[in-house]
Image (cartoon, rainbow, N blue to C red; front, side):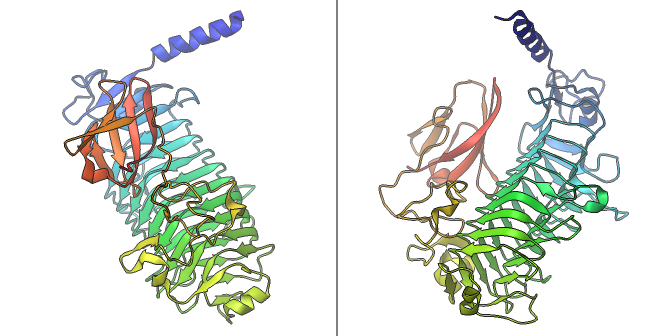
Amino acid sequence: MNRYIFFLILFLRLYIATAVNYHIQPNGSDSNDGLSFSKAFKTIQIATNKAKAGDSIFVYDGFYKGFDHFYKASGTALNPIVYLAKGNQVIINQSCGRGFDGINVEGVDYIELIGFKVKNISDPVGNGEDGIRAVLANHVTIRNCEVDSCYRGIFTGYTDDFLAENNLCKRSYGEHGIYVSNNSDRVVIRYNQCYGNKAAGIQLNPDLSSGTPGISVDVKIYNNICYDNRIGLNLQGIYHSEVYNNLLYNNGANGGGNGMTFFLGDAATGCNNVKVYNNTVIVPSGSQWAVLAIDSDSLFFYNNIFLSYSQKGSLDIESSCTNIRSDYNLLTDKMTINQGSSYINFAQWRSLGYDLNSSAVSDISSVFENSSNNDFHLNFNSIAKDKGTTLVSDLVKDDLEFLKRPQGKAYDIGCYEVVQFADTKNEKISKEKIKWSIEGGIIHFHVDEKDAELLLYDMRGALVNVGTSAPIDLLRGHVILYVLYDKNGMSSGKLLIDF
């Protein structure tokens, strides 16, 4: 072995061996050393002040003041600093002390926040504070967190390589559920649920006034559920990006918003080269359009359900947009190209060269299993079944619930696939990592490590079980996301309980 490589490996092993696990619990004391549960700190900030690359901060169930990781130590790609909630009731209900943010990460890189609940953080001076804030911080991951009743839910600015995964962001009383701003590139927003937020469920907002280039490149937004917001997805100035397998419904009911928007706003330009595939977007009577696009170029709309109970119809694709490609969609038979100054029907829309293989829908309820109860799975005879195109196949491999696409002879339209054959079996993900057996109505998950901790979440981000056993009726027939903590750290994946 090359001696330099040998010494590098030796150095890394020695470095990893010196990584510290800090413990925080409500009955701890900040005069402790924090190196075990019995000698835990009482406040998270004490561990924040000490943490170095590779360290982990374990926080146990209880109520806490927030923490401020402000220009302190950064993690690295191999050794991030990890904040981990060691239960499902780790609740931040006081601001961190810098402004009125619950959790603040600023001026540092490679930080992971996992499993925290941030609730009811007040904003008494109206500055627009956040449940969780990350600014001037790259490679930040926020996973399995819940933010409830804050001015904004999760907010970031100047955050390249940001990941928001499997979070629940609800009832933001000022603005958005998830808000990524200020020229952030390589952003991934997936498996989140955002509802009841005053503005958008998910907002992407690069802005030129904060510096060039005023766009966000390589944004991936997929497998999210957004409802009861003013706007489902509000997207400005995103380039070379992907938006797919999202379910958006009942957005804009009271505020005249839209299902999804693509526009210029504060960015340098409108959206450019964005693939919009296999989304289901239903807007209510009080809203505007399922899709509004302004000042954008090269938007590709394939295999989407864009339906509207609104008098304004399904689409407003402004004449300021260029190179629009739209086909294999389900649409309401009413469109505009000038923000409603005049309207055209589906036939006139097709005469412009759009949606030649798409269909107009007059009865929305006939498409879904039970749309009146917000069940937007396709019914077995849905017009959306087997009517999609394989033009999306390089990107869309499965549906919102991880069912492999296509199930039948062709792709289905929308975020869900219909299981068409009784003998169809979906691949079990991570079967080598987690195996299971059934005994007496109980499902037992078998993992290698004796003291491993297993958390199971449903597709809406709700924790459904902690531990390695659960009643089979709780999980049967569902796709679940798992998070496993063992001697090797944390791993995550998905399981289809199909027996």
